[in-house]
Image 1 (cartoon, rainbow, N blue to C red):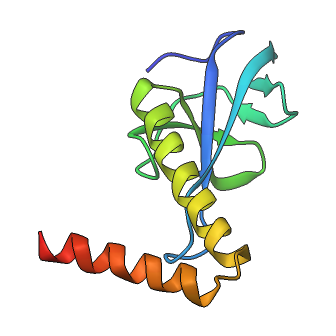
Image 2: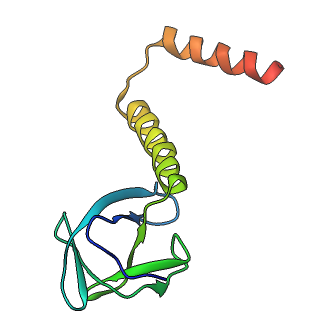
Length: 117
């Protein structure tokens, strides 16, 4: 459990309720003080690793926001963010799209084909 260093990449996740998508934010440590790590986006983290249980086992608390943690970026975190962003893009596309009857029939036929296999 090391302290953060300048150049470390970190991420945070937010979710508005259990039904919402997980939204990832990424940043980088650009400055250190005696007790804080300041991120490129201006967020100030206490530079003491703590047990988190939120997204990862170890996190760094946001100064003056007890329950918010940032975590060191890993390949798994990047992949999870990509997957979640694809879900958000698909959901947004369907929410904004008005389907014609022909398009609805085509989609319905594709679902029927997939269910028969």
